[in-house]
Length: 132
Length: 179
Image (cartoon, rainbow over all chains, first blue to last red; front, top):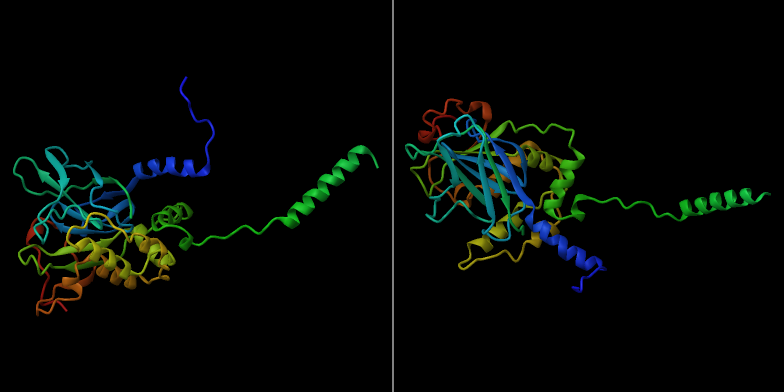
């Protein structure tokens, strides 16, 4: 029989639960791109949204991430969600992948037929990762 | 005195002594917690309140990308409520320090994240002060600090002044005539 540990200390609990801590959602936002400023409804850890252009929103974080290797989960639930795709935005001022900074994330909605960015009235975003 | 009376008195006196010995419950402030925990606590404590959107928006253009359309930044209602509450958000200079670290070549991971949690939080802000905080936190310094050109590239406006028809959204520029 395996030598299972049946008794543990608070330190072990803290260490174990840190995993769940890292796995918990660190950002969520419900964004309306059809209104000026792309305002959020429900949100957590979001300071502001920037209406960057049609179909492109930049979210900034209140508690920044420790690194830009976090995992965004994009989803659309709007009237025009069929035939569109959501992705991390690109083409920032520096030409780098602006979509993922420790301080901000850019999300784009693309019309798959013509490749143009398109406003969506309900863009949902969640991010999992480690906070600074 | 019966046996049961003795027990009752012992329990009562014990309970009385217990009450006297109990330390007053510690009252925490937001500063006792990490920044991300503060928002969770704030939301829990104010879960039955509606948090309104700001009446303001920040209209700006990026001098590094002059062909790009004007951008509109708007605070999240929960964040604005926390800014008005006070004692939660760190000074905006903390974000500047972290942005400096991220701009370093070879940056991989923040080593000074504790600044967010350990720096004494700022006090309550008015809505206007909160918008100024957002300008300094979320807009590039090249827009709000370093720009020397004649063109107006930064304006704080009421949201009602922004057109609702977004047909030509990608052609929007800041009106240079409006005061």
